[in-house]
Image (cartoon, rainbow, N blue to C red; front, side, top):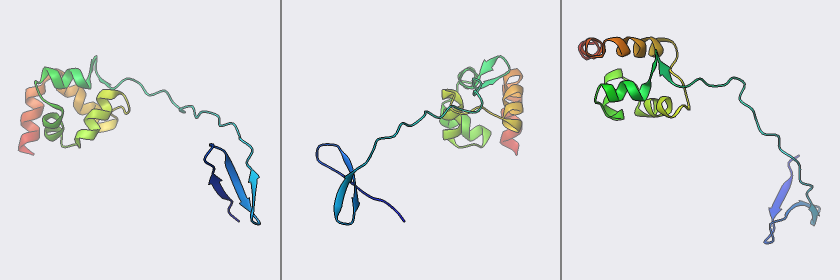
Length: 108
């Protein structure tokens, strides 16, 4: 059975039960802690943003060259996500030889 709730003009929340409005007791919400601290988005010693800037590319251009959505690049640069697996390896290679990687990806 679901509860029917109503927000009153004064900001209170009440439960509607059997035609009556009953006050809803506030409850405390514990903040959710991330299970694992996300490491900064880095490839080698340089971050994704640094790699992209060294290549003189915009986020859109960099995403197109790597074949990933631009949102992925933004998330990596803002630290919301970290590159994993093949992406991390590719970024590590880009850190050492960006021209070679971009040429190889352009042929694919």
